[in-house]
Amino acid sequence: MATTTLAAAIDDLLAVDPADLPDDVLDELLVATLRQSHRLAAVRAQLISSWDGRRVWASDGSRSPGHRLARTATMSVAAGKREVRRGRALMSMPHTARALAAGAISPEHVDLLAGANDGARTGLFAEHEEFLVGQCEVLRFAAACRMIDYWKQRADAEATEDDGQRLRESRGATAATTFDGMVDLRALLDPVGGATFITELARLMEQLRLQDERDGVVRTVTQRRADALVEMAVRSRTAARGRVAAAPVDHRPGRGSNVGPGL
Image 1 (spheres, helix red, strand yellow):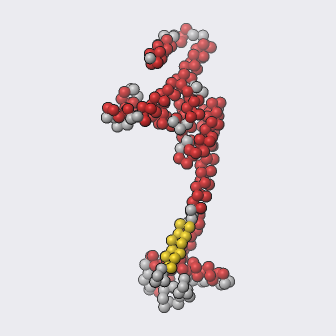
Image 2 (cartoon, one colour):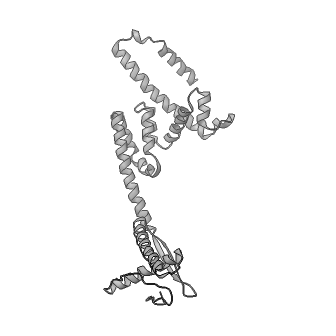
Image 3 (cartoon, one colour):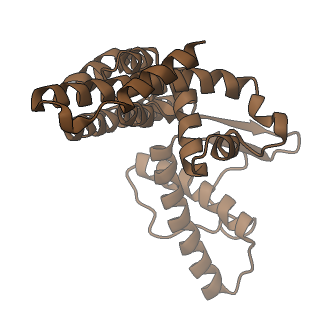
């Protein structure tokens, strides 16, 4: 079996006494061994991905694949969970998986790239993965970390712009008159426009509250909010006529409202 051949190859390596090797041979063997260990990490990821997907780990009642690995493969739970995360991540990162299988990048690179392939960045990562992996193959690890961090910042900014446009396009409002003449208002505002609206509404509501305290008037919060909305319309109409309202107008019946009954 393949595992028998692998075990035999490792036995051969263990039989080598590093003290007997010339410096150049020692260096070459060390680097080659590390590269092959990266390739073994790719094998582990493939096996774990299938083992995890088929829930083989649950066959003995284990709580999670990480706990099963910790117990049966003599590793910590944290290390077991890390192996499982890596296997899952590589399923959606084909260029990364190939580079790891070739020994061109390390498992640490996989974790770095998986951190970029997250959340709203996944679509953009799929487009840029081949380039990012290529950079990881030639850059020192610290430089690769800086490169990935910069890419994530740019990707997040682009996602934010896309989200902002999506939210703005979903805005809308309706105003319908009911059978008894009341007006039913409903609106969904984008974050920027909504913040402007909420701030002005709160300011007018506070003015009305202070006015109620002076006049000894009792008005619920929802009534005050409704009257503040009407006040916005009054001030807009007043501004259009070249005048500025100095103070909120009491819009309750019999209180001098200058709002027509049809509004």
